[in-house]
Image 1 (cartoon, rainbow, N blue to C red):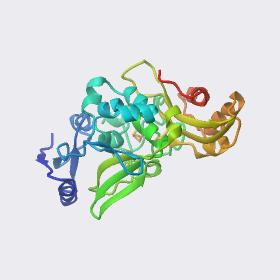
Image 2 (cartoon, rainbow, N blue to C red; image 1 turned 90 degrees about the horizontal axis):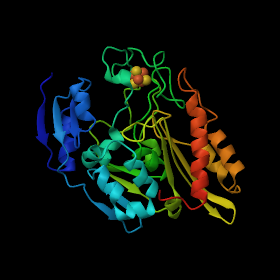
Image 3 (cartoon, helix red, strand yellow; image 1 turned 60 degrees about the vertical axis):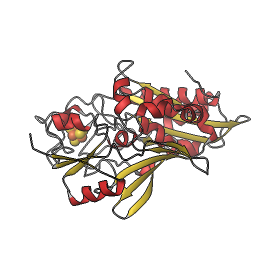
Image 4 (spheres, rainbow, N blue to C red; image 1 turned 60 degrees about the horizontal axis):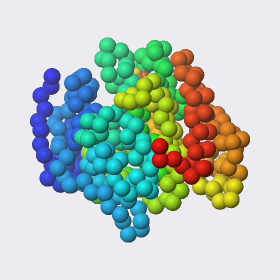
Length: 331
Ligand code: SF4
């Protein structure tokens, strides 16, 4: 194993300066994915910069009514926070559907955004993987690809993003607050993660050395009706085959606000803007939601082992919109 040093950053600015000065360093907070990758020799940092003691552990209501969640808040604390449960229940449900209680207790919001794919070929160095070793090939494309992408994949990589939380954040129009070399900036959630293209080694659009400091949830009254459905092989501690974060706001019979994001289907949380604009102004009815589900999957390109994901996603979308139109569910 390659030797590495360990330091504790004293502030977000200090963390960023250290990361820029040591190009092969990495941040560590909860470590729930990074430690796995270190043990598998996938990551070989020269230095680990501990960012877990920088504060960044507050969940605050801002003057404009948005909720600012510090990047070091644990997944458990977010899921159980009274305002999240009341105003953004789909986020709470998404988090509680992921990992295990023990992992959620130490996993952080920032780390959740930056976790890497669980493609088994990425974790097994006996196989070719463009994400691990650029231009080496993709063993999953002709391997067992049941868990892989049906939307937005490339010849280079067909991996999916593993997060549940991020699917809900995409549907909620969240914003990622980042500390970089040139100060703070905000990145719309849908622009934070990348599709694989020709450079699957890059999962996000974070510049080198930048640190996530918070995630901001804008006010959204419709979010109270939001639904998160996760379909998986077993009912706990399993990644999604397909997941759906959906909401509609209905006045009379007409839909005036719709959001849809999918998980388990693409290299990033997959927001379907086409589906949302189709729904605006339509009647909230079974046939409408069926058409919406077809639109959401019309670009799907299933692989040899995952054709089932298309109809699975369509049924889940229809169900999620139907429940949301009825006012949502706390189940
Ligand atoms: Fe690697 Fe992506 Fe292919 Fe998996 S799908 S083996 S992560 S290149």
